[in-house]
Length: 278
Ligand SMILES: [Zn+2]
Image 1 (tube, helix red, strand yellow):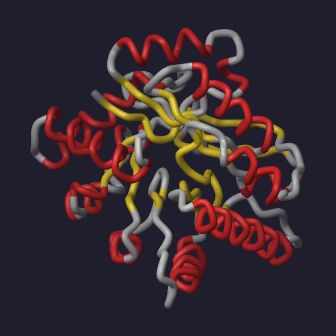
Image 2 (cartoon, rainbow, N blue to C red; image 1 turned 90 degrees about the vertical axis):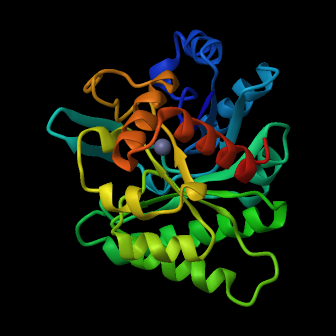
């Protein structure tokens, strides 16, 4: 079996067939964690998780994108331009805490910092807002003893500094994963030293940028994900991604490490079960 540790079947792209997509994945022994990006999508992730007896879990948080309402254009590669409009929301600790305490919620995320989409002239103010929200999520993760799912784009220096600062001298250190890891090996080493996991998705099927990290990191800290509906792996580039396609990520990791697919499937599944206590 495989566990897609970062899916968004709770997003609008699956509004007509989310349950079919989930059932197809479960029928192929692919489990998933649906990740919220704002209150509505977090709640929908929880609803999906509670509908299924096993194999579907939820993570809740306010993504840095949604601290400000604006049009987002993200380009993963020349084949895929993602466009969507964000809804402005402020992180309401109590509301998210209530949601996070529900059954099947296994993590706090995705939260973190995204410096790729800052508005011109607003950079510093927006960074401050993002950091405040991120710290609120760290506090929630610590209070509820749940792992974090961290989103980080062009902000590894600050994410590392915040995580180090937050965990320094504390008894209950934070656990979590850096989803869609986009850093260098030297940054990977620092996350690993703090006990964090690193997670990879379809991006690794069309770039070799992360081969060094994938080859060097301990397998015991590696997770796989799709980030569906985005970032479909080869051979589905440009199509809607779904949890079932997480197998292409596992295949690519096996190929890069020079080991069997079965070994990657087993270890990443065990890693996900351990980190998210499922
Ligand atoms: Zn995501």
